[in-house]
Amino acid sequence: MIFTLYGDYIRHYGNVIWIGSLIRFLQEFGHNEQSVRAAVSRMSKQGWIQSEKKGNKSYYSLTDQGRKRMAEAAQRIYKLEAPSWDEKWRLLIYSIPEEKRSLRDELRKELVWSGFGLLANSCWITPNPLEEQVETLIEKYEISPYVHFFCADYRGMGEPKTLIEKCWDLDEINEKYLAFIQKYSQKYVIDKNKIEKGEMSDGACFVERTLLVHEYRKFLFIDPGLPQELLPEKWLGDSAAHLFADYYRTLAEPARRFFESVFAEGNSLVKKDKEYNFLDHPFMSESQS
Image (cartoon, rainbow, N blue to C red):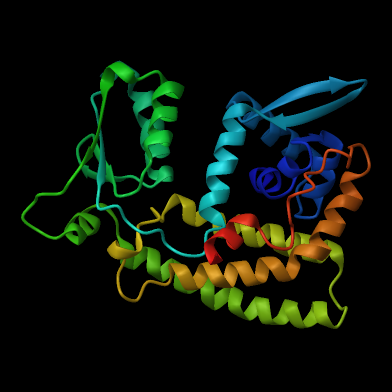
């Protein structure tokens, strides 16, 4: 939830927040001060955020690593349609020593999150241009001696979709998109009607929009974001993305008002990114143009 708040709000307001405000925001979701401080401590140890003292107040901001992750996540969360394919495959092959097993486990998690699929033991593939992400991973984990990375054509005996079936269970992912659509299409209609009638508070809109993003971002961990050409005919990912975007926009303005009303106490609104439009995320606009 803290990641969601940083990604959707805080990074657009100077990238820094007083811990007191963070605690206040998380109270809206039923989290107490102790749990928030414990989560912030974990995120700090993991290198996502960093602290700074100003007088007797503690402020937390995203590190370079955290900002990169938020930017990458935003591009994937807010895109409305699958990208086109350049018909190339990226292969990452590694041979990490047994004594570095924990590092190997961390790398696997990162590769899955980025959209790679396991083709064979220690051989991961993706049809997406993830060269920059791979370079970041190699640098982050200092594994250049153990890694080989290729950009290649597929000259196998089957169709490209046979590789997809081997690496990802798209039917299972599609079922999760269906569940999302069934749940949030109904909530969207109800909340939109409440907002139009003035029956939904700004605080409630803030909670619902944050929970919406928090729930939708879970697809980053299971959906590799495959190009349109490699998706099944009845793929529901695009429909879920459009539902998410419509619901997001409906909640945006009252949610922003609530965020700023709480953020203004203990933080500065002067650093707000004037070009950022809370009503219509820029990546949504780019996808439509």
